[in-house]
Length: 593
Image 1 (cartoon, rainbow, N blue to C red):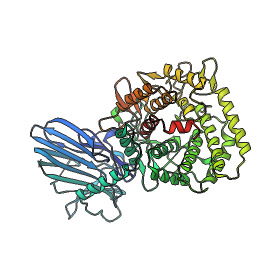
Image 2 (cartoon, helix red, strand yellow):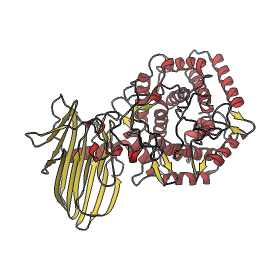
Image 3 (spheres, rainbow, N blue to C red):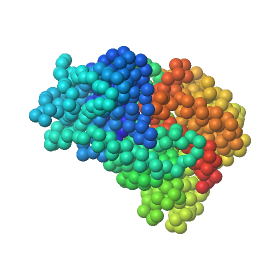
Image 4 (cartoon, rainbow, N blue to C red):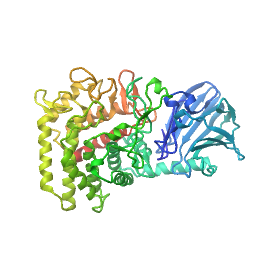
């Protein structure tokens, strides 16, 4: 992943950029080969001869990617990055000769609107190539001679040891003046300084510093700088089941995901991002609490209609390809708890020195009084009908608990008697209806028997202590029924009687990585440190060669599944690393601090 805190590009091991949405994460893609073929947009840069070995790494402390190709005639490096906050967004690729002499081939296929629109390409008097289609304009700047053939721009050139050949691809609105020509080497220096300066603010000093740093950089790159919103992932429709239909657009700001991200960054010492997220939150959810949505656009947009793109065949045939997300219209009760907890902890950390956000918290708490008892669509955004999900009720308890604590800390007027009564009623309701006495554990939803990995949050949010017998038996049940080859499923993908999956979709998905991090956190709270370290080590081993994680992992094929890279997974990594120091978020939340 390359990122500039506005959008992101994905680069494959062969040196091709197969995914890029401009100018925002949620804009239509101009490179969409990831979900189709090269004809849907790609930018390939690689040796024109046989590659003997390929090595990749990020430059230390940055989002600058170096891909080194070794050939029979020499070695060449491809330096890829996106400058942060330029006048016009850009992707810069610098080809560096490291040894010998290597023939190179470039192939640029620009297709706007997710591969549907072929642009009009022309050469400008300054030598740059311009491509225009509708509102979009892209310019390619390079000293290498270019050729146009079959709606494709190509170049063949040779790089020798010590040579450095830059390519700059910049985006602009087609009705505005042309972006200025860029100085690639200067922008590389500025970009490196930005990332290393940012990550240097981190406070984690444990034994997993490299993994925490890479995850923090990834989360930072998933923030939308102009507003402070945080996207769940920079991609859409990467399947959760190979060749299946579990394909969703994650290029939006989920309150739950963004809250987890904010708390992870705050725990790792990155306070500015937490402050920006709070500002985004206050703007996004402004208005009636009854209209609270589980996800918003980067600027707080509320309408994110879901549609399918039939011209894209999908990642390795996984269809449909979707843009937008109908989950924006769901009722997800748990977000009340996540938002209240985030605001409470931000105030604890000194990010709120006034009562400015108390009015919002109070309004949300008053609304919770009238909706906590309703069925909802749950944390996993099921499309099989609303239920009384146990996790949702637990987070309703968190919502009113954190509102009470905030009011007490601020010394403001609030109906604390009524709220304390509600807190006790929700707690009793969950313990009576969310716990199956015959099975001896908490269950996914009231009246059911199935387990759900979201139940691992019960001790992590302080609903019950980790040594409570009901927590222990639930953990044991999850180990027994949801663990497959050492990793956790979210839930079994068949219904209570062996029928359709509880989410209303065809069965089949991988192990959900965040759930395995939650499991490690539970082990830590129970003092099972050796097992927790082993689980954490297993999860670290699933990262790709540059330290990135997707949403899920396919235990049958040993490959990642779902959108990539996934904020949730990197949040779990940071939190568990902090928890292993015994001073992390699990200990603080579970202890009521």
